[in-house]
Length: 136
Image (cartoon, rainbow, N blue to C red):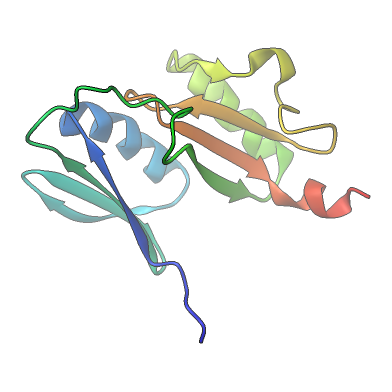
């Protein structure tokens, strides 16, 4: 059997707040708005899509990427220049860069990428894959 990844659905407390963040990001990386309804939004790239749905009840435990469950979403780009441009845009938008003291090599010496978080604290990683392939 062969199975390809299709989609992921992420529940959020405030859809509009999260959508404002993800709208610009997905547009910037070339994804398209796919679906939109009162309680949800999705964006897609080719056959893969990500859905955000507003929950009707709040969790007594706030999201923490260090707890069991989803930790982060990762996106691959082609060049270090794309990482640098995105990093500058994140800073201009006052979005905090995670692991700033090790940026852009937070994943190790041969790694080039940037980590940041959405308004709910979901970590986002954007990295250059070619540098990983070149490492010993």
